[in-house]
Image (cartoon, rainbow, N blue to C red; front, side, top):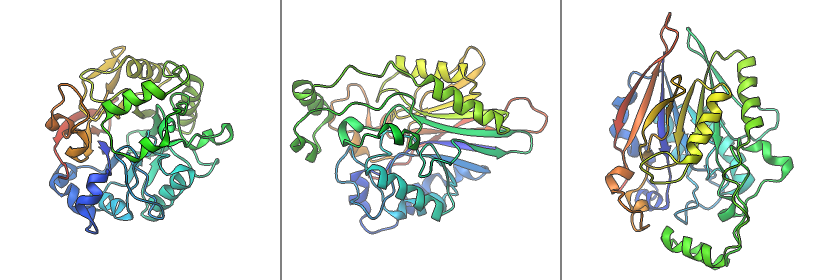
Length: 330
């Protein structure tokens, strides 16, 4: 059985404007052949899908129409990871509506939850192995969107680290699609952000989730980790720390995202294969322009790789292969 993993699937403001009322199905047509031999495709869905709420109106605040999910179905993407920094861009109600829409189209999801009783894993029987899928994110942009989960609601998102504290910055600046470099200067001037929690990792929660998945019968565990910084050439110290902990806690394969560019892969402890970032499967090139990101070409920021994981009878470990995917919506 072949399980295929994609990079981030974004629905940004520029994509909404470009498509208008047209179907989003056109966006991934160019890479259909890449999925032709895949039995299961797991997409990294980096946007809420809450059609009852406003769609994307800011380059750092996402929300996709229902047709975006129809696009996933058209490419046979029936599994998605939903733990990412944009999962609360439309608050708890947007998170719940996203799950309702995914359920409507029979797309299985992992990483965010509408009910406390839901398991924090998916198990796939490949015939040769039972594969457990888990998804975690470093945060939820709570410092920007202000949607901070209470202690009673933290179960709704699988978090690698504590949520970011909210920046005390005049809200008028949130209305504009200002470049990231400018926003960072504003944050530095007005922001009174608390001490960063990026060095704090929720090790106990990670270990518990992996152990529960193992106890439910999984004998090979794949973790999708939304982590690190953005547009780097090498994995950040945070990403390496997270992936080291994931490996120590029992992950067998780690697939990272969030950097928006392809990053190197390696084996942790000469054992656990780790792809630090697969890049963006779908994004708008305009979203990467004008942010003053040094040495990052538009081509690099809009190219991704697809990871194929082949489980074969009698083989103790799966075979893995990469495939380039260059799909953008201008």
